[in-house]
Length: 205
Image 1 (tube, rainbow, N blue to C red):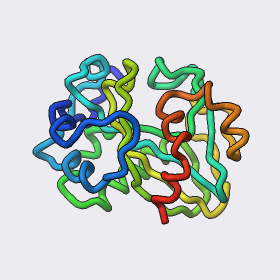
Image 2 (cartoon, rainbow, N blue to C red):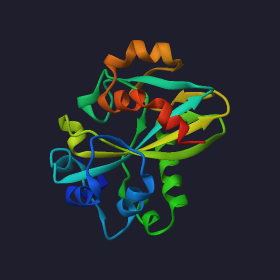
Image 3 (cartoon, one colour):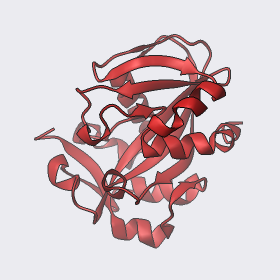
Image 4 (tube, rainbow, N blue to C red):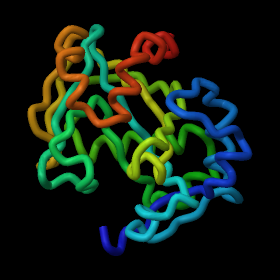
């Protein structure tokens, strides 16, 4: 993490586009501006983690198979130590400088970068469709203040998913009742997504 260069935008851009708390489904209003090369840049990760004037762009991917959602618990090897032991239904990752150049291209190139990020954390044996459905912001805590999520839903044809990193533990697909029982142990982004899961899934149709 010490020498990692990550993609950020200025908080002022988010405010200009229209700051919000929670989910915003106007994906076409925000994402093109966030990915425009004149609006984003790469910066060292450590200082960005405590600088609320910047927003780190984080794809946050929910993996769904026949209505069940993939859930895991962040282990001690998690890159974001503030989220250790929290439950999650989102696979998230920073856009790094080795992806530079992609963002001068099209949306398909961005989606390819998202798929690579997921591929670093999970081993996907299933075919899937990728849907960018919402923006996610949570300024209620220190982690959320410096991140801005782009929520994706991967609709999987089969439940063939295995962990690819040690920080992912207790990986399993859960139904609504099981997720409801675990809601209070989830990280805030996952709680926000779970509370509006029907809308997120509807946006993939």
